[in-house]
Length: 308
Ligand code: ATP
Image 1: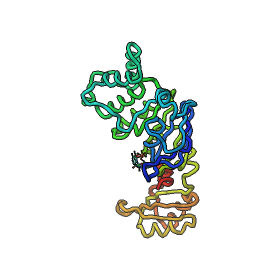
Image 2: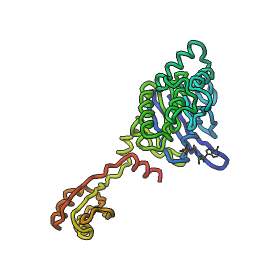
Image 3: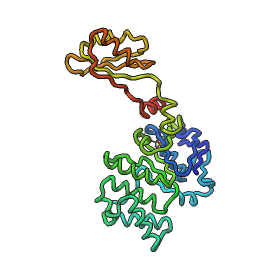
């Protein structure tokens, strides 16, 4: 559906994208994940034809963006990082304007507005001015504008930035629903976002793709095989450390301050599952084990590892 081939983008002497290539399939929600300044916005603006790359190609539905910019833009809905909204215009006026930009007029316009207002949940806000909308509703309006021409592809630049936790969940649900029949590319630096909505993740760091795959594949490929265990022990820190340090497979033990009086909390890193050994050695030292938990690795760990 979208093929990005060896895109290089230079701003003067600075190279923002270095030979970036990626491909999306119909009906995929692809997450561009990267820290600030990684090049996500630059890549999205190139895919949507709003920015020309220094070299490389973008092909959408068999058409080259450099030759068929308008034809491709008619297939794409783009929500930029700061959607341009005018505070004294109403939601309806914004949608009418967006429809007209795509040549949608008359009854078709009314129908298109009804449909996108319904999909994005702003049907009851049509006569509100932008100044009267919450941040979440502004974002819904931005999405409604991007959807007005029923595009096959949606490109969303950090769609949940600045929203409160409830609004984030609502917008993510909406994106997932839209992803059922559209190809969606979204950018984010929030790990939970890619885990919650994306089928595939493309990690970008300093202008290069550093990893690609489903969240599960990336976890499998890049997560460490070490065990991270946290134990709370009834007894002194010194005694607890001495008991645990006898275990050969443990590579690191750290004492975590702040435990209740008479207890110690230790964080343990080991090459092999050390749980049985921990229980045995603490018992031998006559220390009661109050709690033991295994820290599960997350996409966040993978991201930190690949982008630090
Ligand atoms: P963020 O998560 O902060 O939005 P991003 O991954 O979207 O970051 P970009 O906005 O694409 O990153 O920027 C990539 C790099 O290119 C940054 O170092 C940025 O400063 C630089 N850059 C972006 N636009 C320009 C420009 N017009 N002129 C010069 N440098 C630019």
